[in-house]
Length: 504
Image (cartoon, rainbow, N blue to C red; front, side):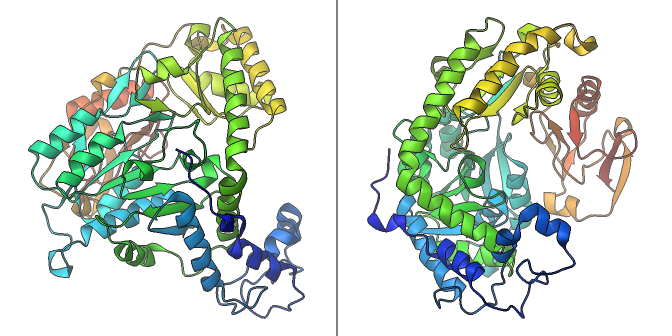
C-alpha cells in the first residue's frame, strides 16, 4: 500500500533549520569544541568530513537555528511530518539506531500497570529466538521475561525463516497473559511474516504487537513492495532509514499507533536512554530522508526494484549461481522485498564467507552479509546501473576461484541449524546473570554453568546462549563444530577465542 502523500511532506523544517544555522555568519561560543569546523587543531577531521558537515554539528543548547526557531520546536514539527508520512499517531527520530527503539518499546511495556507493578516477575513477551540482539538487550533492561518462538530453517539456502503465524497465534491462545508480541518483518534477507493473523489474535487479547521493521522503512512508499507493518495493524514499529533509505548510519524512526501502547510511555522510555546531546547531523539526515521518501520515493523505488530484478535475472543466467526469485521467496514466506539479492554460491565450491572475501579483495565489492552458502547484496536508491553491473561482473568471475584453498575446493558441509541446541532456562533471570559477578572459563569446561553474557555465532547472528541460560553438553559440542567451520562467535574471548563468561 502506498500512502497518500500530503503537500507539506515537501517541507523538512529540522533539516532546513540546521543547514541555515550552519550557513549563517554566527561566531560560536558554545559546544562542540571544534567550533562548527573552524578549529585550527583538527585539520585531519576537517579534511575527512569537510567544513559543511562539521558546521551542522551544532549543540541542542543553541536557542535559534537559522530561522529563529528553537531546535526542539523544529524537531517536534519534523516528527509530526514523519507521523503523517507513515500514518502513525506519533513518531520519533532516534539517534542510536533501531536498537534504541526496541529497548524503549520493551521499557514502555515493562512499565504497564504503574510503578508498583513494574518489572515484576511473570510479565512475559513472545519473541522469536532468531531476533536481533537488541531485543535481548531490551528484555534485560525492562525485566520482561521472554517466551521464545522457535525459528524455522531452510537448509537449501542456509537461512533462518520467519515463524508461521499459526505458531504465534497458538501460543497466544494457549499461553495465558502476555505483555506483548515482537516479530521481525521483513527479516534480513527480505522475507515477510504474515502479520495480519498475528495482529488479529493479539488484539483480541488486548496484547500489543511490536515490529522490528529495521529493513522496511521504504515499504510505505511503493505498491511494488510488501505493505508496511503499521498498515497491517502493528502497534509500534521501529525502522532503520539508514539501511535502505538516505539517512546517516545510526538514525532510525519509531512509530506508535496508539490504543494498545501509550505514546507518552514510549516518549518517557526514550527519555531514559536518549542522549541529551543528539547529533544534529543525524537528525537533519532523518528529516531529509523522510522528505525524499515521501515526495520522490515512489519513483526512486520503482527504479531500484527494476535494477534489482535486472541483476537477479543476470545472476541466474550464469548457470553456476542462484539468486532467490519471487517464486522461491514466496514458497518460504508470504511476501518479500525484491531489493534484497540472496545469491547461493555453493555450486562453485565456495562458502558464502569465502565468496565475500574474494569479492572484497579481488574486485572491491563489499556485500552486506555472508551465510554458510550465500551472500546478500542490497540494492538501494543509492545504486546505479554502473554499480549493479560491477556486481554482476564480479559475481560472474567467481567461477575462476573454485579450487582456491581447502574451503573453496569442495562444497562446504551443510551446517545444520536444524540441530541448533535449544536453550535451557536456569533459576537465574537474565538480569541477575548479566549483573552478577562473572568469570571467564574455557567453554569446553563450562557444562552445567550459567551464561553471564550473550554468545552469538555470525552467521546466522542468533544467540546460542543468553544471560541466565544453562550451558549444556549439546551447546558446547555445537560451539566446537562452529569453530571448526570457521564461524565467528561473538561473546567468546581470549587469545584462542575459547573463554566464555559465566556466573560465579
